[in-house]
Figure 1 (cartoon, helix red, strand yellow):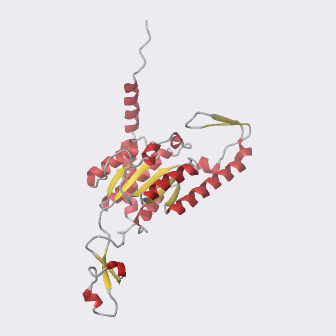
Figure 2 (cartoon, rainbow, N blue to C red):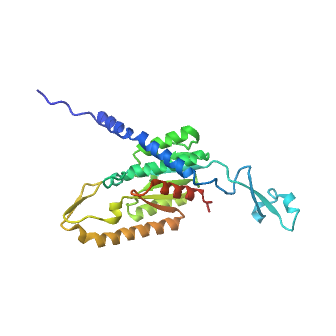
Length: 295
């Protein structure tokens, strides 16, 4: 009797997709719960920009010209005043969630880094959608959209998309866009420098959400331990893992400091989140970062 034929590539692909999609409702429910809790603790943004709601008066500057002078207010004193309105115009926010092999790491009883990153971005997308923002996932969803269609499309892409590096390295987006990037940022610093440099050339800025599993930061390993590289499968065997702890901590701290310096250099907000802590804290920090006036 001949053996059963091996499943075709398409069959395996369909199985993998169905397995991934099975987690989507749970991730979406978690993201919406987090978004609702964060929404109770934040208030509307107070920014100058396009809109109709009065915010404040400010002194006229030469570059403003005469067209924007509020002559009624200016007549009350010795200065010319500009009437500023609250920021209301819908902007586009672009997301990328790293889908590399290392993002599958998780300590026992804790979420997979990739899933925590997805949940955080889905939650912040929900909050931004409530404010009328247009949303898109780099390389996944095309042009930015608002409303129910926008949030559903983006949420599914963040939960189920592959998130390959080429989507962030060859991003197609308008100038001066805002981005939210979620990754463990364990690629070499020079790799991230090249990526942020490309964004800077397009006038883009935003927030970096660094997802960390506690074992990566604490290095709790002892005794005979084998470490395997998620992407290549290469391994390294230690007879006494604790002997490497000091050198590992030094390297980890150095990499984190370099990443922080890099984000400051390019004007990005870096938020580090450990998966053993509530996701809502990361979402709130992201929301506050995106609500700050752009320089």
